[in-house]
Image (cartoon, rainbow, N blue to C red; front, side, top):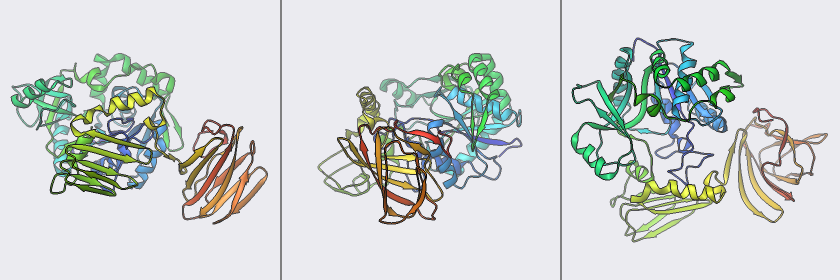
Length: 472
């Protein structure tokens, strides 16, 4: 794409609240398959994995590290670098840390900074825009990508173009906060404002020089965090104490609103940030009455609705402009025009300390997953899936005993001093306080039912003695 090495830097540390209940803190929207067989993160990886590009750098919070690593593996991306943010501090410290890390390879390397949760329908048009932006970046500009607005959208920030600029590289005269409806209508009509896509392209050295001028406190913290970076299996961990000293701030506020080198290219590639359920409805296939349906659904006399079922039948009659999202533990019904209001719902759930705000019934772990399928006083039932070759930590519990029943596959069990195999329809009992572990030595997933019993059944009653995934 350019004479300089182009390195995709993918930001995948977001927590995701606007697509609740499908997206949650422990499994945010970049990991969801909303418009095909690949997740939004995997689509982003493939979009920027051309032969002229270097392997990508991904930044994520350490809580999501195994999810990111697994999705990178599934996407067939090799030699990716995974950098762990010890704290969520906004896009500015994440991007600056990546620039400092990459500057060790090349002062002039070009960073293509991409959120991991956007949809771009026209990959060729996207690559053309990146080529154009690369030319601006090589001339010392801090490039971003603007989207021609087609509606008075209040959910996006806007880029204001210098009216004296000429295509294809347009100098910017301002970054504008999310407007009210009347202001957004003015932006739509005047032709000088574009939606802020949140994608950027910089030379590493140029970015660092500009940050030193306009956000020195961010740069100082990130320099120390990168100096203290350490390898942890397949990950690189930034120094947590140093990183915590950075302001929690977006790159727009820290730098782009202040620099005199900001410019943009138009991106006309079918872009969407999938920022609400109405956005999901827009990109989904529609029936003859503009309904978008997913899963087991039955509708009659409905128009312009989004109906999404994960497990069971959803039947709807006589609805218009309605969103229905059903998951195993939560059901959302809302007016499509209020799609931005899910954030308020999630905030209230968090205030009530409801687990539905942050996690699904099925919880992903680095070794597989578990699904809570029943509970009551002093007992809990889970369905556990362990991937081939994976194993749980060597651990013990102070308050609960566990009964394991193998449904399919083969289990290797460490039970105190004993080490044995279980196969389909066999079971075992792990007593309170007994050191134990579970491994799948086979070539197919191990599935088992776990019945927990005891005075306390919380996930924090796990004492890990050793762990293949660094959690001990």
